[in-house]
Length: 306
Image (cartoon, rainbow, N blue to C red; front, top):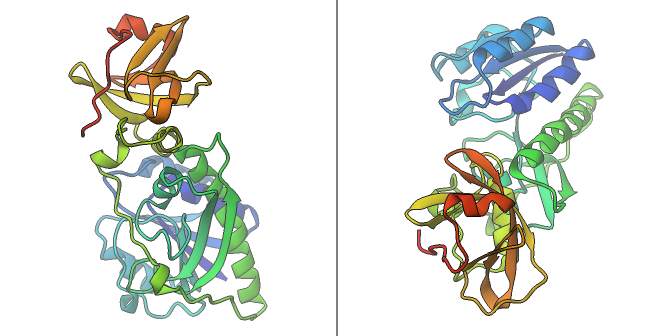
């Protein structure tokens, strides 16, 4: 069986590694993206070493020519920036499947890991579904969830899902080889929700409105692709990379800073507060004990508006 992988991200590497190490015929179509998290040269080198057929996209129309020329039996898409016209990918006998790092239909859209973490989901879902012309709406053929642990961040979750997708693809391939019927869960459109890519307002703390847990969930969702969650003070942006709930109650207004005993504490709603462990200014990661060296003082207040 010839397996085609379409991706513009390093999340495809665990899948490619497993397939190639097991002598499966695999080929990669690497999509062009201004925001790719791996260079075309690095991925081309990886494919060369692992004897994986490689094509780097120059224009999105090349995808259809690539499929017609190479005739893969099945295609898996794992991170791709462009909408695909399914009718132009004719002659893929065992189907075309999209690997979506989110629950479906609850988390459709391009950034499901971010939104699942931001919303504090107890379970984080991954789904593999049939590709259709309507984004993330095809029948789900494989799905699994993992517990949202306290130490999970955006980057860690993507790494975990890049490994988990291998299990899903292998189970699908096994069924296809055995000519067994795949699971086909039709998505319930009444539960569907589409999330856009996060904008500035989505990655900023509103100290007046957000509960402590909401802030911690947002920190997880922003680390480390956004270098932490954003907040404003003294006319500049500070990003919180790591924090934990402080046991001490406070009467200070939300967003008020207290620096004492090498601790960087910020008041939140309902008398709660956060101990900030690491923060980021100008792409520099700074331990909390040095907060005073960056003009941060007790009594100052973070701005809540975006």
